[in-house]
Length: 452
Image 1 (cartoon, rainbow, N blue to C red):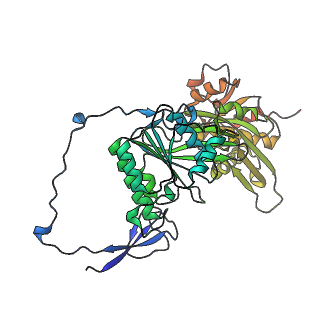
Image 2 (cartoon, one colour; image 1 turned 45 degrees about the horizontal axis):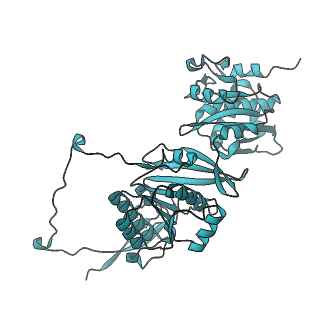
Image 3 (cartoon, helix red, strand yellow; image 1 turned 60 degrees about the vertical axis):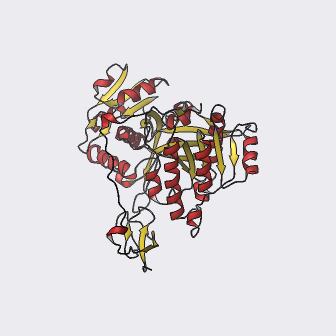
């Protein structure tokens, strides 16, 4: 019998090592290595070796392709984030905080699809009576969904192979187990890896769409090995926004659609209700006071008009504070430094508080001009022109560059009565009636004339 040996694998990135390490050299995560027992292979004779045949190769032009159908639920925000609906034969992972509404949302999606499709719902966390109670509360007591409380992946895969439904929902993957992995608990690394592998091949072999829910860690990432996210076809997060009873569905990975796509929902008495026009809600709460400006951020294919708010006050401590939410901390600090360098406004001696409304994290450089105007507006305590949208990118030299996709953003703003666009000189915006352009940060001061 060969002697068992030990191998250590990182739970975060699957990096392997012959010995235990405190910090992973690949992903730099701490205390993520777990021990795995391996059996060294015995030397075998030529007659005992496995004879492998060569792989069959195809040219791209000779490969047959089939147009797979998408499962369209009729919930427009869900279908758009999914890329037009769930594609048959795909394995989808939906993750989110406990209690954010994952089970509620997938039950509503399953109910809509079950009207015309064959939908199986495997509840491994909750009993069937609990699922029925939720369905009754949502008004879905007479749904055509077929329910089961089976939690064994082998049994689920056998049911899938025998009956070939259109959609299989597993809530959740962390509560399921494989009989072949009896030595490990449900939700462990080996269980998740093997279960995902089995479901992935079953989805492709039988052309069945599989949607699984998953837990997340305290850092907001999917719990379990990163390998699980690489194996599935799509990863989606359902996030909560405390300001309203709203939820944001975000596409992080989608092999059959665009990423960074977002959908908005309201949590109400009868489940999640889609918000078809989120920009109207954002603008309804805009203050248009000193320190406030409108910026635009593109999430996937959707332009979002957001309010950026800045507050600058003289620092009472030795080291000024920088409290920033909704945007990268260093970007606001960098723009404050540019304004102080060229306009001589003493922002380095002030506490700066900055936030973006709506619970959306802004990544685009098109918001640079809006950040600068918000800081200047609160510094001089003068509001910007009413209902004006700022689009532009700032250079370290103080020059202002046109924003990417500025025409799409301006077109979206015009739908809500935003007539004035504050931007760099941009040929794509020539048709706008109220356009005020700036070449550099010096010209921004004309928006804040001195009182006589």
